[in-house]
Image (cartoon, rainbow, N blue to C red; front, side, top):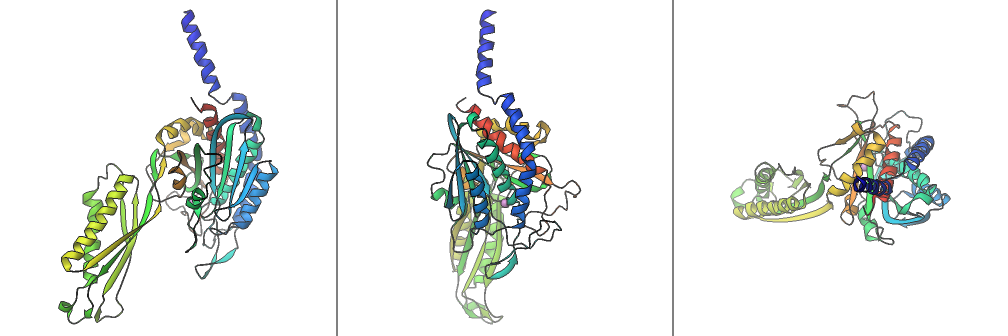
Length: 434
Ligand code: NI
């Protein structure tokens, strides 16, 4: 009896140490509720003043000013316009990175909002409207809010929080480097060395107030591929004089369909192979010398990714060879898999449930879109999740998707995002080393 009592007591003490205290929780909840109007105000400011990838100058300036006003050690100009803040807690503990992407898109807003964007810019030589059509304005505002609340609770923090405000998630303009990949290259995960990273994305199509996630591969790796088929040019009237790269390309495109349908174990993870572009020839009566096709591959598993590459190469070169042509295959890896460390994901679920409510945290299927947060997760364990923000009056089947002129979110999702990021941070800190 005594021994049992002692054991129970001992366990209780241990558990208590490994959890965020109810008083701190209550305090954080209260502060989040109080800060909500300010977070919305920031979001509206960024929404009205969007900036394209690698051009987030004003956004970065406002972020840096805010971090400095909170006494957070702040560095700017990382990976072009990135801002990194370092908040050291009073107690020792892990280094936790929190990431928000800052860039907008070359999309002309069609919404009727008082804070609608009327900004224009030149992109790839074309005049275009600029819009936060992926909701990165909400990410910046939320992380500014997280920084404010954590900075005001520095004495309760165990370890260090690194705030990463990232440029160019949508991809840098042609000819430039950028995004998470460049941030990693410039050492953003070092000094101090990051132990874990968290990130979120607002979702216009998911139910308001929900948080969705998937362990392991959540968002796909995106690779681009190019197949150049070299044949022999001839008069269109005398095909027997040619090695026709157009016919060879048609055979290759057909055969590539069998990678997904016949050659990959789709019960493990889905795979997408899309040929999206094909260029050949100049005139109806000339069989060209060359045809070039390109497309994208989406995978959720590294081994499957390597296998798909090998199969594309084999099919293209093999078919070309049977026709007496030559196929050159090149791959351009764009983004790795957004891979949620399974242990970390399981460990963070209670924190998300705390933020959104137990029935609002939903496990989803993988998404074939890509997210450059994956570059951080290649280096350190990370967890990425979605925060649902579909305006309740919109039909889920016709809600405008991300990257469109009518993209719209319900701002009451902001506090869910704010609480989620606060909760995972504190939960990780207080359960570190457990
Ligand atoms: Ni996005």
